[in-house]
Length: 124
Image (cartoon, rainbow, N blue to C red):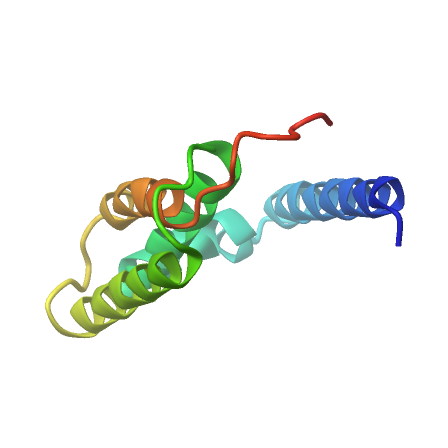
């Protein structure tokens, strides 16, 4: 598959996903089932399981905060996996019911530092 074709497919998939996400949230809220919106359920899951906002932070740090690759791939993935497992273990033991923004904010630099997207070839 050519890179240009893959970019178009990826752009369409992301756009369709965003439209479905926003459309569903609006439709469910407009029908009066506000607790069933994706946003509200995501927040509820964040209070129950801190790994969810942490993983979301890692993805945000990866996608929107590119940087320089600073150590080998295998080591980054090993450290990233170790931090993920540690957060999951802490979540199941000592971290229940903390505000979800805390693990989210912790995940953003982890995604940036350990799952770095190099700042090259970023033309859209």
